[in-house]
Image 1 (spheres, rainbow, N blue to C red):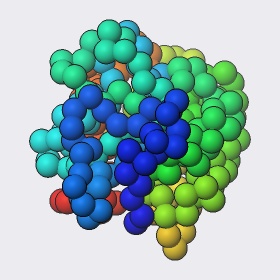
Image 2: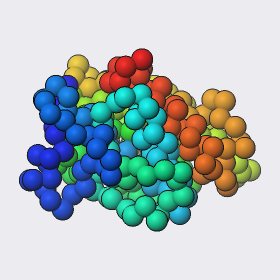
Image 3: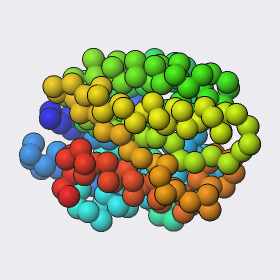
Length: 239
C-alpha cells in the first residue's frame, strides 16, 4: 500500500482539506506516515447538527494507537456537531445525495487526495426516492470500480445500512434488498484493491435510531465499532 503524506497534498492542493485538529497524522519517517481514510457517504456520514460516527471512530483509532488522517474536500466547523470530543472533521459526504449524484465529486477528491482507505456508505437516498434496489446496487458497484481505477491499491470498506423504521415499501422491501446486494460486494475485490463488506444491520438495535433511518449518539458509536471491525478484517490496522 502506497501512503501519501498529508503535507504533500496540502502543498499541492491548498484548497482541499487533509488532516485533523490533533497531531495523530504527524510523522517523522516514511514508514510512520498516517493511514489516510476518506469517509464517503450521505447524511449518515455527514450528520450536520448531530453527532457522527466519524467522531467516535476518531477516538477509537487514537485509542488503538493508529496513526491516521481523515481526508476529504469538506472540513465543517466543530459547531456543526454534538460530538463529545474534538475530532478530525474532513470527509466526503453530502446529505441526501444519491450514488450517481455524488460519484463525480467523490472520484475527483479521491484522485486528488489518493486515500489509502475509503469508507463507503451510499444508496439510501436512491432507495428513499424510489429507485429499485438492484439499480442502486449496480450504480454503487460501478462507483467502487471507479474508485479502484482512480486508486488501484485502495482498500474499500462498503457498509450495509443500519435498520430502518417505517412501514413504507422503501424500508420494508427495498432497504433490505440493497443490503442483500451489498453482501456480495467482496467479489469486487481486485488483485490490488480489497473490498470488505461491513455489516451495520445485524444486531443493530432500533433504540439506536433517532428517526426512521438515522442513528442517535449510541448508534453513531456502534457504527464506529463496526467500521473498526472492518478495518481490522481488511488488515489495514492491527487486530
